[in-house]
Length: 172
Ligand code: S3P
Picture 1 (spheres, helix red, strand yellow):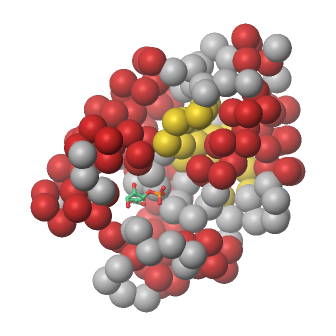
Picture 2: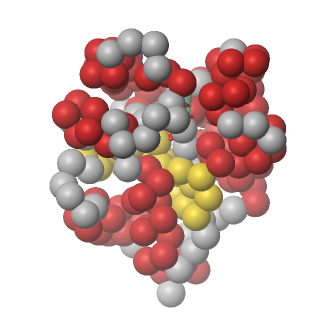
């Protein structure tokens, strides 16, 4: 099967709301491999929610934990890994992912991001202000980092079938 040919983890990067978890789960199922969400692993390791970690210790502390968790996941798991939107912006984490994984930048337009992030209110970075403005600023600021990923795929289309197919073709 295709899974046997995965010689490195497929690491999904890109802004919050772009569809990393949904697409990651689907992709892993089709590849018959594992899926892991780095944010969930961080919450498990810290025994706290991401919001609580941000509140109690700040963003820099969160990024350190995130870097360690992603490093561990890439060693353990040659499946699909979804990362939090800021992970690939951290220089060290990005180098690690580019060396050991196949980085896939999932990208979409601002309207799609606003709509998708509006469904759940679990993101500390979107709490203090207008989500559209915050997302627009983050997109601009982070694009230089995201564009270093080995693969760039748009995710605006509905049920993600096209997105998943494009990734599968690139891996094959
Ligand atoms: C963040 C994105 C979140 C989470 C944290 C910080 C970011 O992950 O890691 O709230 O800096 O963009 P998602 O991209 O899965 O929402």
